[in-house]
Image (tube, rainbow, N blue to C red; front, side, top):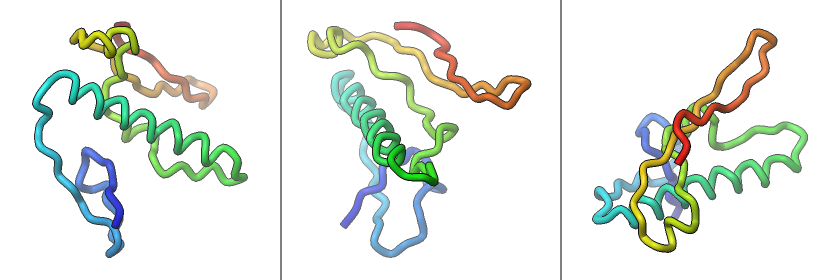
Length: 105
């Protein structure tokens, strides 16, 4: 059995081996932050695993990462709620894609 982490039902592949799991709203800020950190860690692992290939076929596409960024570990470990910024892509005139953080911690 596999669990596919996604906020959008349209992202779930149409294979029979993957089940869509809906999790309830988090009970606390720390639970929400833990989910956010897990999501970004999976994103990073996807990048690290794919960088060794020649095709660069990432499983998680940048434009689908709509979660806000995690807070610093210091604040997380002390259970200090904080509003963090989000990450969005920006393509310049030459076609280069960069990232913009809209609000620092």
